[in-house]
Length: 250
Image (tube, rainbow, N blue to C red; front, side):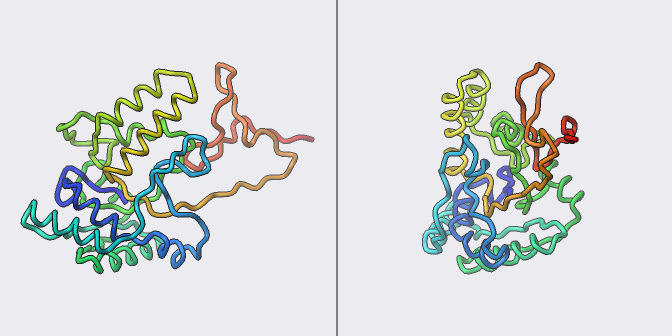
């Protein structure tokens, strides 16, 4: 779930923490996906060499109410929000469950079904409060840098940073990772990114499901890719397998 951190209620970290603490990911995984998957713990899959576990805490309705009360003290308002939901039955089921979970913490969620193109435009222009999306399927954390790019206090009309969240710690960690070819140092830089996101909660990660590609043994190089320079590259991007260098053995 993406939160527009430039507008109420999610311009306050107390609101983001309140909804995160009211969320029962395990229930969503079991009741919507029949347990086929895992609880998502951030921008990177737990099977990735870049993964660092800084997951959000387990559901705690009591602590959620405390954060909601703190938000009310800060703003004079209780937490109420509208979430955009794309036209997919499974995603709609997730949204309905999440609304009921937050209601137990006294947080009001209004669901607004929208076509996918409307949702895409709304998040690009920052015209929303929360949006339920499917994403984070890329194999490398560097590919998510545009989602976290920006300058503090600047709100461009259109942005690839859907949440409008900018943290200098995250920006510096990405810059450091790009400045070195040392994989060990990169892992540490991306650990900083994942750790900070788990603290600031611009995104609420719910569940992770895996895709599978089946092919005959005669189909070669389906997991291999050679770049123009001759070095190894990624054969998969955003859950899409590139077929440009695939060949069939005779």
